[in-house]
Length: 61
Ligand code: FES
Image 1 (cartoon, rainbow, N blue to C red):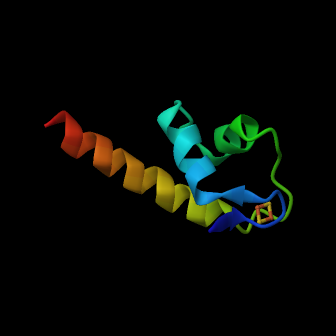
Image 2 (image 1 turned 90 degrees about the vertical axis):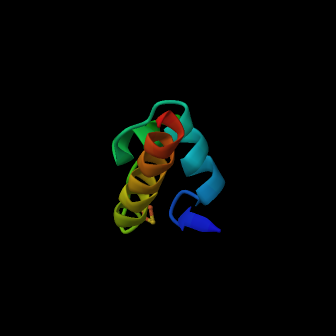
Image 3 (image 1 turned 135 degrees about the horizontal axis):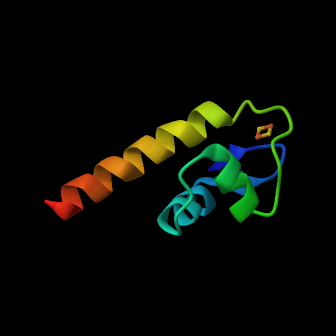
């Protein structure tokens, strides 16, 4: 599933960027060698950041 249609960034690429240390949408774009254009995907990126943080929080317990 595509998260960012402008840059063709898929959900799995966003999750990989987060796993590699991206903590903000700007860092996700950078990890995917792209840049925000319309920025409609930023809310979805923030949601995925939040989900991944929850997963890491549970894994750390
Ligand atoms: S959908 Fe991501 S920049 Fe437009």
